[in-house]
Length: 52
Image 1: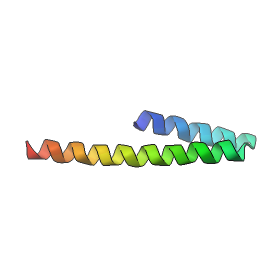
Image 2: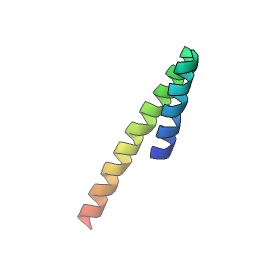
Image 3: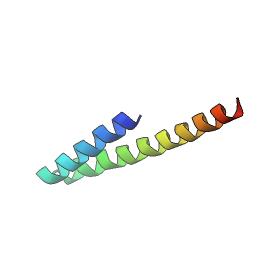
């Protein structure tokens, strides 16, 4: 998940530099969603590991 987030952040940065505002915004939005999903899964994994 984190790898996909980094990929979409890089796409957003490149698209922003090249002037594709819509693509950059969409890629940044996807990266933000994937990052929060990654954080939730990471916290759940930590909690499950701590309860064992």
